[in-house]
Amino acid sequence: MGLLAEIYIASDDQEALRYDVTPDVFRDRKQYKNFTVLELSTLWAIMQGTAWSVGVLNEFPTLLVVGGGERLVHRLPQGMKEALARMQQEEVLACSVKWGATAEMRRQPRDDQPIIEGLVQLCREAAANNKGVYLWNCV
Image (tube, rainbow, N blue to C red):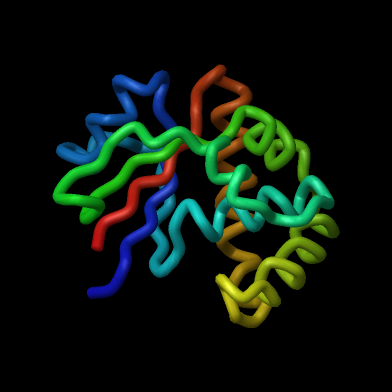
């Protein structure tokens, strides 16, 4: 089964926590596999043009920890949401090349481009409706 990584939109942190129990009621979501907040934090560092440091992880608040980390919910930083909502296709391509080359991802850009495109789509929807974007992981 692997590691599930689902990105979704919620009105606030309280609503976001309900995803763990009733994910099917969340209309705006994308389902992926095999990345965590660590990999998203490397993407955020790339987007900012800075070197990744452990401090970047602090920008992704942990809202839920179940079973010692078997299930997690994190909120994406407001700045990341806004930057992704503004991202153009050429930036998506550039980020997918850099992100795929990181030690955390080690994948081809064609594998990461759809993830970034999904993030862009969700972040645009969230920004237009003043909502947050969240990551749910399940082992």
